[in-house]
Amino acid sequence: MGAGAIAAIVAAIAAVISAGVGAYSAISSGKAASDTAEYNAQVLAAEAKAAQEKAAADEAQQREEAESLKARQKALFLNSGVDIQSGTPLSVLGDQTADMELDALTIRAGGDAAAIKAKNQATLYRMSASQSTSASYWNAGSSLLSGAGKAASIASSY
Image (cartoon, rainbow, N blue to C red):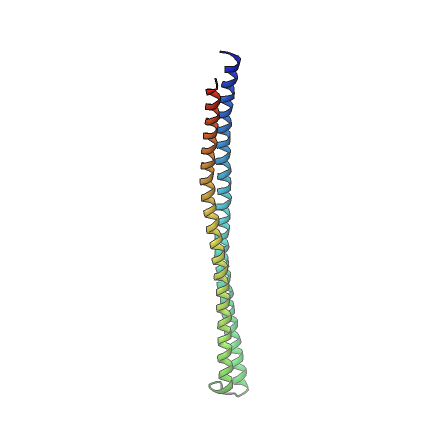
């Protein structure tokens, strides 16, 4: 076996090794990207849950404060001798109740909107994780085929 043949064999082996390293690198890179995206998705899912829990707590607090304010308002009306069953006091209490309920519902809607946004972003990260894994296998296969092609080209030249 001549020096040219040995050089060709070494070059073909190097091409195969290079292809293997490239394939391993592609899969490792895809796994790392997938793991990162999945972690981000989990963080956002927790953020969505926290947003809803905070909104529920804030809504409950708003309702408690509203009830307390209504009770004080009624007491003030009653202590001043005003009939709260009709007229302006009834209208004031009714408007106040409606405004406070709107505030509570606005708090809930804000929490729901934040949760939906975080859940949607988490879904996108999960899709990215899946795509990263698939892309890594395609890149690994491409690297292996390219290396095999180079090895075959080198081998056929001798």
